[in-house]
Length: 452
Ligand SMILES: Nc1ncnc2c1ncn2[C@@H]1O[C@H](COP(=O)(O)OP(=O)(O)OP(=O)(O)O)[C@@H](O)[C@H]1O
Ligand SMILES: [Mg+2]
Image 1 (cartoon, rainbow, N blue to C red):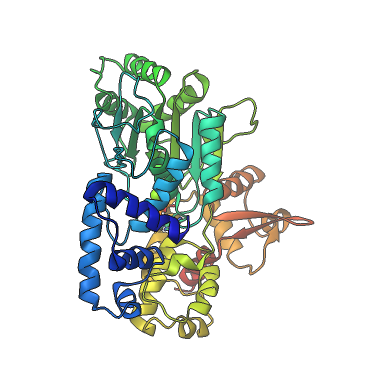
Image 2: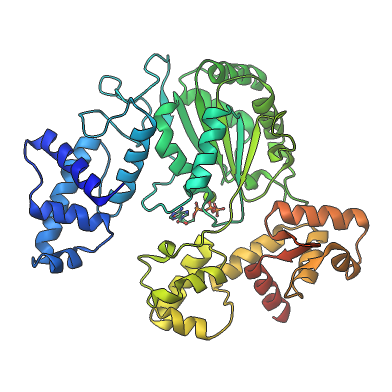
């Protein structure tokens, strides 16, 4: 979408609402905001006072919020219009700026009178519950991943999709963006986090309540009720933070006793024929997420790693933009680590990225230390041994070489190595030989904690 197209979009919407076209200052605000300029720099360019530009902006965001039925601000203007543009191009029933009701906000019962954008107008039920989903303000890249999700869900009718990867790689954000772009293609969308997990029975009761069904007495009857809904309409259920239902101190992806029913639930989601979709988001892969045969199983797995794009360091108060990519490389494009190190660079180096990099060390912030401390404690004993040994090597090594240095049985070694890959702590590199290496930031943490 070009800046001229955006100005035209906004002008058309504002004209329909107010009967007036955008004036020069309003146009400057739209253009400048689209280009991510501050009010100060827009004001300088047009020889105006910054406060006047700010006032014009606030008034404009207010008008757009009323038209779109969602909170438009300077900080989410661009992402909202990009989303609206993609959605309008994918769905002919949605037309922007033509008095059509549009909202991506949490709605238990959307206003059907106005909701001409809901393509499921004939469905008996329509329920959107995104209370636990984060609001996305900035969103960069990930077009390929969004296309993949779209294809799996809408073209291939894939019933279970997993999005997995190390903490902070943007899993939750990606899936929420997918939901924002495609909300109205589903009759029901429910987002739940398992950060504080609940037994399956409570989750199913909760899902039925959102769908306005009186839950029956037993779990199997409730599951029958739920699958009836999933069969009759196109629903999307998102379960985030799935790693919390897995056991600590054991190999990856093993369900805690209280949450064992989830395993059967995921199997049912893939095996029973229905027209709905479950997306699970997890830092840890379990066997239900593995797809060994694309044709046979309606399961797909998207593994997410960091994002190598300077945009992700915008608005963090950092200087020396020409060094940003180096910083991103150092922290493997991990959003959470980069946020943490940006705070440190601001506090100790006055935002000078070049000075920070001149130290020539991969610095582990306090926040990273406590996070990796938790990660390490979560591992099984064989995994801890493998990680400790692997952290001694600067370069990737072969499986045999790794095994030689350890006092583990073949079974423990192989299960441990597999499990560490399921947690995205160890990656496999395919060169002439197959090599294994520890995630660089985690390796640095391990080395540091061995010295302490
Ligand atoms: N594509 C993106 N564009 C812009 N910001 C992003 C993007 N992806 C992630 N972020 C930002 O990075 C931060 C971490 O992302 P997110 O919470 O999605 O990671 P996660 O993989 O779900 O982490 P965790 O496993 O800890 O839940 C968020 O604050 C989010 O705003
Ligand atoms: Mg997350």
